[in-house]
Amino acid sequence: MKLRLLSLYPDQMNIYADRGNILFLQHRCEWRGIEFEVTRCGPGERFDPAGFDLLYMGGGQDRDQKAVASDLNQTKQQAMRAAKDDGAAILAVCGGYQLLGESYELEGETIEGLGLVDLKTVREPGPRLIGPVAIEVDLDGEPKVLAGFENHGGRTRLGDCSPLGKVIHGHGNNGEDGFEGVKEDNLIGTYLHGPLLPKNAWLADHLIATGLEHHHGERPDLEPLEDSLENAAHAAALAAARNG
Image (cartoon, rainbow, N blue to C red; front, side, top):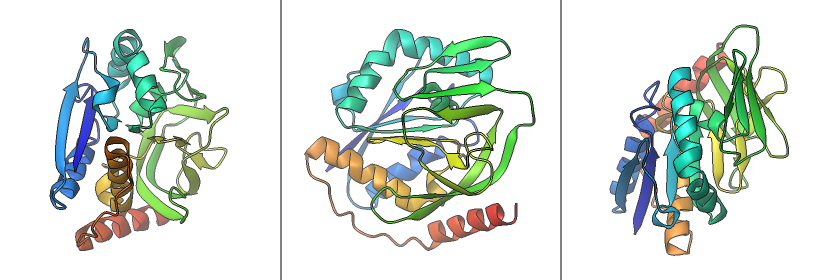
């Protein structure tokens, strides 16, 4: 089996060690004998949506988001939409998550997003939403907990789409409605940094299985791994969220 991952803007959108998510996916594939192929796609570059099973975009600072947003809409919007419609898995974190939506308003300026999901983000007066966070999600018919770290000034509000999960501890999308992230088809957007996947190995496996199903037409039963370190990392992240 083979998993083909597209890393979008790996140099511009890599804050809080978000690149570690790709390394973790790679290791979990290699430990199972699954071939793992990474393609980098930066400013000015186009890609064939049929060539990838999992698309990933991390977070970045506001100045990087502005530049990336313009390039996304000019060179990658149609391919991103085609990949989503074809069932490829998509994971976007923080700034990448904000750019999946319609727009991001900050300091009197509106940054146009991809419009892949019905959400908007606004930089409103008030403190940044910072700290450990835990949310309850249900991706495979069994409620599970994601734990990580959030640090965002934008408040995201969902329209006609579903949240990734309910906030147990922390702020979430906007600190008001009790929701975090977005989930639509095989697309996931979230504010959880840290990086996210090493603290939540089950989500990494969910993405791997979804990507392999996209490539090979059948969802595999992934071989269990010895996850004592990963479970300890999750427990530590969850404890940090509980303790505020």
